Every structure is written in structure tokens, then in C-alpha cells.
Length: 422
Image (cartoon, rainbow, N blue to C red; front, side, top):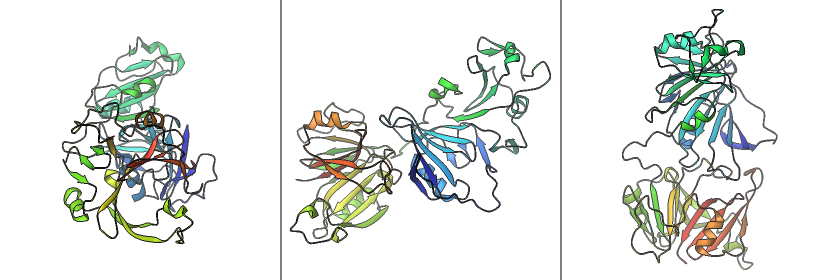
């Protein structure tokens, strides 16, 4: 498991095990003493199910005095697409679980109900003063069907649409539960008159009608469908040496297009900045310019599309496209949303339909060994590094082919793709 710790306004500031900078806390703010609105099937506080991970970080950045300690974890360093990306708030006892492919929020878990107080309608549950008991939950949310008892964990889970509560059952009272359900009438009370107190609250999308709780039941939480017309995770088809085609909006942007063409097709860029001298060119001994020299070329940054466009400073025509995968473990993580690209060669006839990806195409899930099977051996790689302070995961490797270059992380996944005309 790889873990990064977020301090103040830097979402990926230090690796697990590295020395952390001093923590800052707003004066008068007690650890964990916050109240968030509980919205069954929708979210908690500012965090809404289905939101991209970049938007979640934007919410964190807006309230640094509340979310001043944040852990970012991806659970499988070598195969980051297999398990969730997790943003955890240890001071407040809850975490957010993001689908690794779409990088959208699929599940919110309050794992320490004593730390986080939740507001539902006008009532408060959780926190140190209002424990969420079985009787209290039942009284607040109303009747429901019997839940599920996990004998191995000793946990009974009560379900409402888009919401579940997990209750630990003391060993001496396990006879109250059998065959995965509760034998006693609701609300559940033990023979001594006590009632269990919830140990975990889960919020998930209710449209799939799944029961999401602890253990393997967590895997049933799915990302809610995107709103109609949403451009998030839009397939961007790239034909090497020719153009980009955006499958939802239908925009075509070829090499050689002008800034006016790009504004017309994609709208105003999120940012514009001038390019430094190409680091690959300045390896030449005949080039006397220092590394920090600015050239006339400039970038249009479309962070919400995971895309940079480079214009020639003399002709003002597109000369490069840079596509970002936004994988954890890369120095640009959380700077761009994920670009859902489909790259194919000019030898392919016609245009590939959205959602249909032939074996010869390259996507964000394509690993480097598969790229080599498609394009052949890329030869020796150039090493790209920003120093351990900027990227604790170390350097990446850049492999060049005709019309395309791939920046590859140590786990074999593609970090960025640069498209150009040879």
C-alpha cells in the first residue's frame, strides 16, 4: 500500500515514512469537532458521490483549517487500477473511496462515528455527545427491512436507500442473530435492555439497489451514472500525426490549428503559460541557452480535460498535444483530470466508434509492455526527474516514436502522452 500525507494546501506533499512538516490547526478548532450534513445516497458535507477526485481536493483546499491533515492512499502501487484510491481524514474519522479507473467518488465511510457528528434534517447523530444507537437510528430514519449479520466479523448491518449502519454484536448476544438476519423484532435491543452503537456508516449510490456494508459488501458500491451531456471521461481519439477528435462534443482539432480555432472548439483555456526551452534540445552542446530560458512557444492548459496544447510562438499553430492520465504516484497527480484517450495509427481506416477499442489502440489502461507490442521497441529511454522533494516516487522514463512520446512510471503505466508531427 502506498500512502501520501496532505498538509495544508499540498495534496501530495510527502511519502509515507518521510518526515512530515509541522501540522497547523486553526485556533479554537478541536480535533474532529466538525458537523457535516448526511445525505443518504448523495454524500456527506461538501463531498458528493460521483464527484471526480480533483473536485474533492478542490473542496479540501477551500477549507484548509478543517481538512488540515489528509492521507491519500492507493492500495496497490504496482496495479493502481485494481483497487480504490482513498482520501482519508484521520482527525474526523471518515474516508472517501474513488473508483480507480474513472477516479470518481463511489463510497463514503465514516469509520469512527465518535469523531464525526452528522446532521440529518434537524437531528444530530454521532460525535462524542450523541452516540448513534440502533434504537436512535431506527427512530430517526424509520422502519426498514431486517439487515444482514456477518457472523465472522460479529457485525450486523442495517440498510436504508443509499445508507447503511454497521453495529457490533457482543459475543454473548449473537443468539439474537441467525442465518444472516435478525431474529428479534426491530428495533433491536439486547436482553439486558441495552442497544448496540454503530461503528461504521456508509453512504453510497442507491440507484443500483445494492446493499453496501462492511467487508465484501463494500465492493457493491458503484459510481453513480454521469449526468446527461457530461464531458467527464469523454473519449478523446488521437490519430497519430493528424488530429484529436472529441467523441461527445464532436470537435476536431488538427495539428496546425490556430488559437482562435481552439477557442472556438474547446472554449477558453483554464490557463496559458510560456514554454521553457525544450529539455531534449538543450542537451546539444551547440545550444548555449540555459535550462530556464523561455522560448516563444506557449501552452493552452485545459486541466478539466486532462489536456495541454502547445503553440509555435512564431506561426501560432499547434505543434504538440499533451494528454494526462492523472495516475497517483506522478508529480502532476491532481493537477489535471484524467484524459480518456484512444490513440491509433494513421494506417487504421476511418474513425473508431466511441466505446469500441481495437487491440491496436492505446488507452490510459494500456501498460508499457503492451505499447511495445503495438508500436515495437522504443529504444533507450530518457530519464525525467524533478527531484525527490517534488516527486517522492522518483523519476519517469520517456520513450519516443514517430509522432508520439510516452512518459512511463516505474509501475509500467503511462503518465503522459505527447503527440507531435515528425
